[in-house]
Image 1 (cartoon, rainbow, N blue to C red):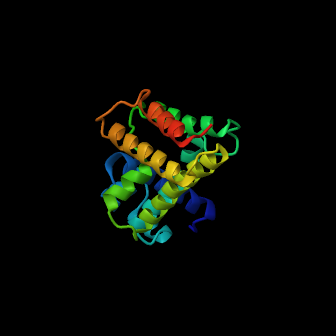
Image 2 (tube, helix red, strand yellow; image 1 turned 120 degrees about the vertical axis):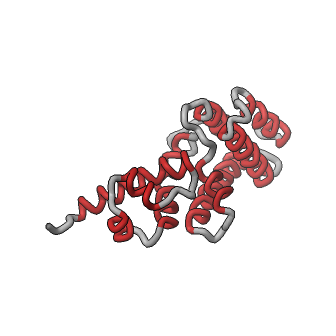
Image 3 (cartoon, one colour; image 1 turned 90 degrees about the horizontal axis):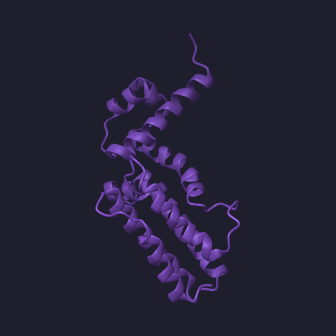
Length: 191
């Protein structure tokens, strides 16, 4: 029986959904067998759709990025003033960090685990992290910060550090990241 494009899309979706969950929860060292078992597909099917596990990881991170950005309130639908838009990101981080199964920023986790900036998934993760910095920079510029680029990098550092500590269960973020971000915004002269 011939496979339809809908079947392939369904298999692809199942693989990417399983990859998003497993790589985030258990790390990037998950084997192909475990990935395929979780997705309910054969290894042969996986390799018909993807060249490698590395490609599955990269595509799963690409798939995660838009929703991640929306959850942080980085999209155009957030009509708040620049300062409030930035603080909203940190409020969302504090909120999501309390959820069961939170393991930190999925993009930072992939970068730390892979340790190879040329890895296909690292390229995707770096792009996502750069998008966050750029969103901070745009808002900092709109809000009148003295040095928007520096402020954006500082905010990203707080975001990533807080994500990592909360993901490792070494810290609870309640009020911590928003107060740190507020101090940076105040020091930068941002309105």
